Amino acid sequence: MKNVTKLFLSAILGLMALGFQAKAEDFPAEIKPLMQKYTCFACHKVDARLVGPAYQDVAKKKYSVDKIVSLIAKPQPANWPGYPPMAPMTNVPKEDAVKIAKWINSLR
Image 1 (tube, helix red, strand yellow):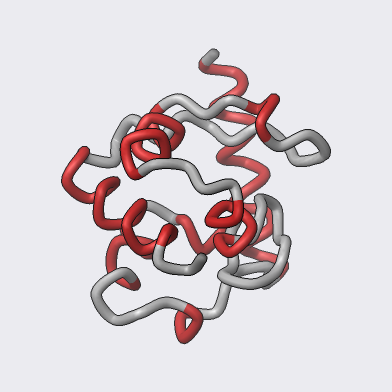
Image 2 (cartoon, helix red, strand yellow):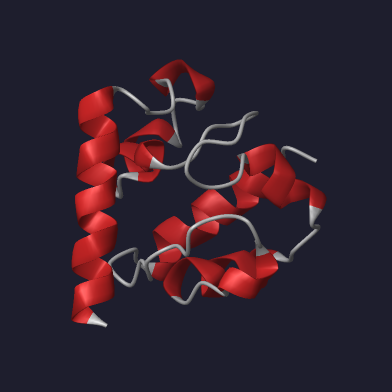
């Protein structure tokens, strides 16, 4: 698992160096600091595929807030075939994950 995490972080850093990041203006002011803190910008945009799916596409799946929170901590790659697996983001506190999940669902 440590090798997967290292590989994932290396990929993110490489992509960030190439400028493949979501634009900060794509996110509301109350969500933007969370996205920056947890490096969500590295892989996701609001309305377009990047490394990971667009948040609008996640919203279309109609996951509950609890489901999104659980997927942030323990991603299920089978939910998103054709995308690289997301690293578990266990560093995101539940309170912050809930805010992110509610915002994602607001994009429906």
